View (cartoon, rainbow, N blue to C red):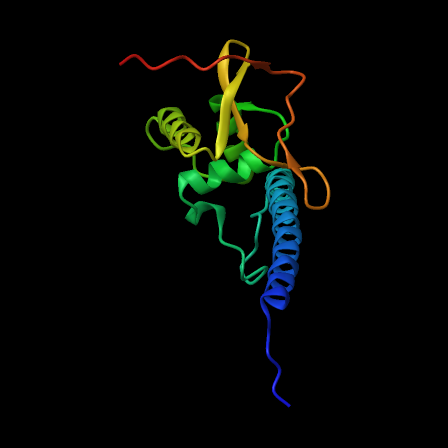
Length: 165
């Protein structure tokens, strides 16, 4: 017997696929955030124990922090924080991760990276801490299938400056 799919069954399949995709994307966001926090924890504890974060042969599938591009390392630091972070705080987070911050003008590179992430809409740059611009990821997990932007209690939202023509 040959089964013929109708428009209705296609729509049902589409809606079901959309719901599953939304659920999986939410889980991915939550896992990515948790992984970023654990990377920082492992980095800090390894420093305190005078050990490498990932000994040779352990956790083979983990990309060593040293092999990450600066933009990816900054993303990890931002994902691990629910509070907006300044460029200096992101540099501190990179150090805690074990990322090499001894390169020339690392803070300028971080500022450039953050500006580009803000331009693409990946991070929000509407915050200020201690008179400095602060950044954070645009979307935070808020429950199954829901993502919201949560204002920080310690940061001040400042209006964006209008670009001059």
